[in-house]
Image (cartoon, rainbow, N blue to C red; front, side, top):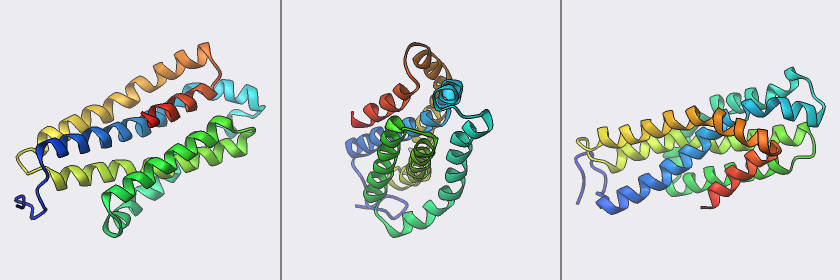
Length: 183
């Protein structure tokens, strides 16, 4: 059986599970974009770096996203959704772990770039998956759920980050993200 788009149909339960898994991955990667901004002053103090240097943690992340998001269209044509999702989440997890245990600014920046490499794949992959597995009359609801997650993650990022950094080391931000990926 095929949908109106010509793609094999996916059962309702399978579509729901696919959405839950992919939206969770997207949530964590989008949350990570805004999580670090509040933690820059403690990072600057601990690593003895200037604000202009610390800003590269955010700039490098966004530049990597900007380069890799368009490349994802090419990757989606060459690899399966499952392979891309697992690769994206693996890159993100490895980058998060590198950042969490980084002894200096260089390692922290490398961790952020590796994180961004995985995160950049997530949003285009999520949108493509929604358009593929949902029939046209169901896409609005799926896109609405996706939109809520995309808006909610950056909204809570600075608050969550501020609370965590106030009570713990900035490294806890990366451990929290890394732990949430395991579950």
